[in-house]
Image (cartoon, rainbow, N blue to C red):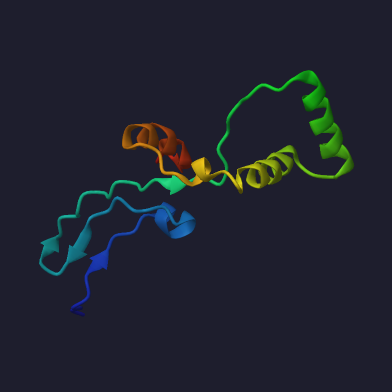
Length: 112
């Protein structure tokens, strides 16, 4: 039976696990050249990991609040920083291009 639809030779892994097949698509006239694989796109991160230092008394109060408020540390810091930065016009001002490029690349996950 002749078909006008191209056939693809799928591997067992492709059929079972959904793994992309490296097989060459077949047509009635022979193999077809596959396009080159696309570059993986950067994915935005949900949180940025960073370190900082606090005075011991502030750190103690932060941990006490975290415990008694039944919150995660990142939630406490997020709320505190959002409230602090809300009335700071400098926080809304765009960074210079060179500084932005260096800083903002931490906001996306590198493709695997």
